[in-house]
Amino acid sequence: MKLNYLLAPFYALSALTSNASEPHLDKVLGQSYVCSDTAVIRSENLTLQEQKSTCSKLSEIESIFHGVFNTKGKPVENDHNLSIRVNVYASRDSFVKNAKQHFNMPTDNGGMYLEGLPDKEHNQAEFVTYQREVNNRKVIWNLEHEYVHYLDGRFNLYGDFCASLHDSHSPPENCAKPAPLLPHTVWWTEGVAEYIAWGKQNSRALQAINKSKVPFKLSELFDTSYEHNGGSERVYSWGYFAVRYMMEEEREKVEQMLLFLRRGDYPRYQALVRHWGISMDEDFRRWLQVTTES
Ligand SMILES: [Zn+2]
Picture (cartoon, rainbow, N blue to C red):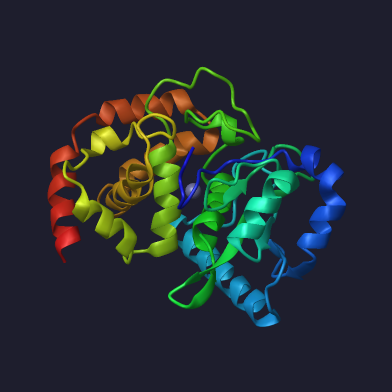
């Protein structure tokens, strides 16, 4: 998968992989900062101020997420991912050099969420990212997006990465082949990460949509995945608008869908999405026109 921007919520079996490389990992990601009961930052070179402001951003996203989904702090059944460890390399170079060894993950991407096996007690959810300069300012790349994957995985999606619906078979999870039949859940997982991270101000998605020659229908977007029906514009920018439309215009349908996703009843999720069919395509097209003009 050659996305240079965001990447899928891949999940490392970190308990299996980190032992051999732990000393080296500890040396590179030598600093640890406890934000709260739910988040710890391990970093190579963040200043104290940067660690504090990162904690604030995470806490802001967390409260937006819980508010939007009215979770009441109740995770899905059998999820023991009580907290997330955020791993921040000092640069893309350091990320590319180290993350494969430290987390058994590919590095041709903009960072990854590694859910591990949430049904196992003492499982440690991680996300792995790096600092980079954007407009002469150092930022942690995709911080908010990856954090939403953690929250979505804990409060909206039952089971681990391989339990949800997609066609990625890459390490570290190497999910079984063949991929499940369509529709998959990628439009939701990536779209909601973008939607909560950016709210109504997603200029990157807006630009991508405006450049698209042939607009996607909503019914096509439900079939988005990674290896097929993918590409970063479709996955992230179109995913953002698909989720935003559903959240703002079809919230009841979203709630019905989440009932199935939270229980891990993926067959009924697929039946529901197929039942929606093309019924919202025309309204989505009109909404998108208005939304992307204003
Ligand atoms: Zn993602």
